[in-house]
Amino acid sequence: MQLTNLQFGTSPVVVHAQGHHEYKPLWPPIRDAFFNARPRTLSPPAGLTIVTCNNGHAAMGLLERSLDHLGLPYIVAGRGIEEWKNARDKPRALIEALASIDTPLTMYADSRDAIVIDDPCVVGGRFAAFGCELLFSADRMNWPPLPEFQRYEDALAAGVKTDFRYLNGGMWIGRTGFCRRFFADVAAAPPVEEAPDSEQGLLKQLLPRYREEVRLDYRCEIFQNIGFVAKPILELR
Image 1: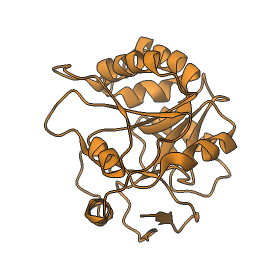
Image 2: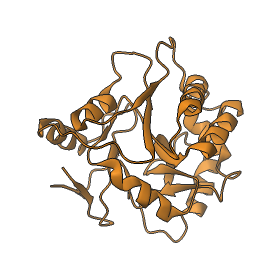
Image 3: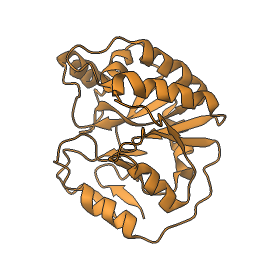
Image 4: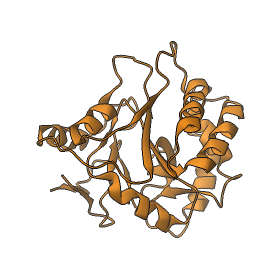
């Protein structure tokens, strides 16, 4: 199954129905079409490890189901961590997982509300074209909604014609060695006072420090966030 973003003519490989809100009108038909399609057995993408975080909560596991549907391997970090807090536990779990990954690239997606819908063998080449060390998905919404985050990320996206201009930490791909260093800095960063449990606030704090190394997928070339998207900008084939 292929998903096309008609705004950009791109074919994102990972789709994320981000957030706990219910305004995700395009999500059910995409999710259901994927799982109703015949399962596949794909070859693991060369040089790439897929990782997620799942402490075993009943709400988790959608990403793993999608990868099982495609016959793809993955690593699950954060197993058995009770009273999970994203700002504390997600960076630590990722650091532990990254220490054991020996592929040049690592790709992450949230377990609860993301699916890999197509063969990820293409993402390495697409990532290389960005010329960065770490690429995050881009979102229509700025969360945590601090004005300084919005001003900075609006400035970063200046000149890019896109609705997707704000960092979302629910999907990313990066060079494994760099990701180890980056998430060590994330784990050491102070929480955002307005959203102390949000690891996304930690990521946004670090953007200015890593302006050259970290970029956002403004045109949804690999990642598609679908929350708060109502226009029929996506086509399934």
